Image 1: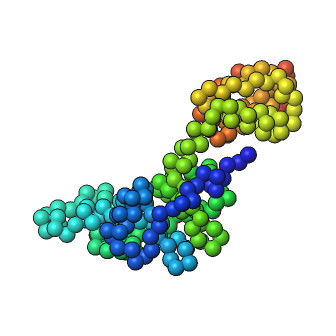
Image 2 (image 1 turned 90 degrees about the horizontal axis):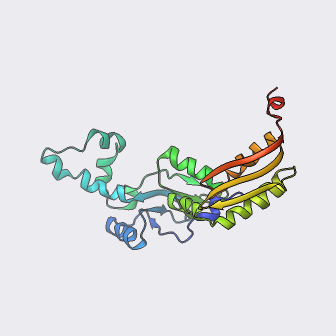
Image 3 (image 1 turned 30 degrees about the horizontal axis):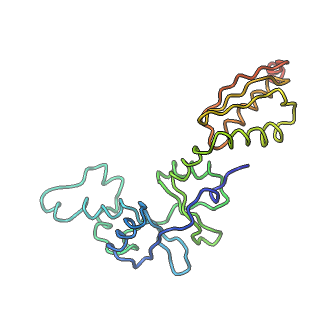
Length: 226
């Protein structure tokens, strides 16, 4: 069963509006135990995100340091060209990063992970078709997938892969899972089918690694290559 963002996202989300003052945002981050909050409009549409880093611009780009001859490192100025503007911000609308990076709840978790990596963000606002907030998914939420129990992982491999997805005899296959590492042993009819079984096993959420000890009765790999 493919795990979606809806399955792992946080639904009880700390949010602010565009008019929320600086110190109230800081308080929301601390009391909520989060590192960023979505900024919503009157229709609960996500218009931006304010993070701890956005608030810290006020220190990093503080005018008094400029008067003392200090300038933030070039790397910081290149990464945050609007740093000085945000340093002068007093409300969420002035501090937020916009447009926000969002994902639909039905998206596969793998897609969410790739989006986080490509956009260099630690969390995504989860929105419906109208852009309204339904949750937030973070890197931590995705990491939790690796905490699945060994028995749960083994059951999914047996039921969803060996018994349903593979249209071949898998009665000779044994599945063992220890701390997320899956060992496939036993036999299958064809070498290519054994390779497919190992590859599909590696795609199961929570699998850390696959140890392929499968043997086969017929080596059809050369025929497949031809």
